[in-house]
Image (cartoon, helix red, strand yellow):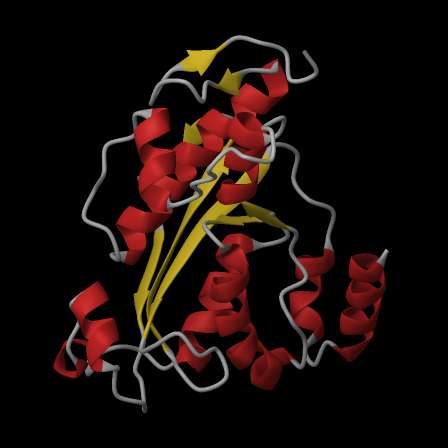
Length: 223
């Protein structure tokens, strides 16, 4: 209900009618996996360095048609952030301003739901720029693979069970190869692979067994 109201408010605030497509109905069985690398972890102050997005149609991950961009930043990366994404300030000097990246990104995403790992952070980072650009926040529905994973593995777990929603745990249980992390494209790709598996498992009522790592049990979700 709140999300619907926010969409209505944002649609009236939209500063450029050329972007009303963001509020169109979602294309059936299509989503976009998205990841950002940033100068730090404060959405109010830090900036996007790199951003990648990959469309998913059904079970098909369209890796041949990705969106990738390097952004110029005014703020220097925190030393701890550099250790994570390994991008120096010099590496992004030739990037594009976010005001040039945003139109391309928005057309790539369209009205598709956004898939990510702890998606709220990436969306909040984009919303910082979008507020200045279109006076709105991203209206797209968000799907977090950690939530899907929780439903598949821990949805019926007793209170004493230790819960691990780390990205590494998700990849291990789903037997997804661990690419070099904290690279926007790699992270978006691994997220896309996790989404396709988890979405299919939930649809079929398949659980991830908690008794041994990586095992999948064909038990109904309601069983």
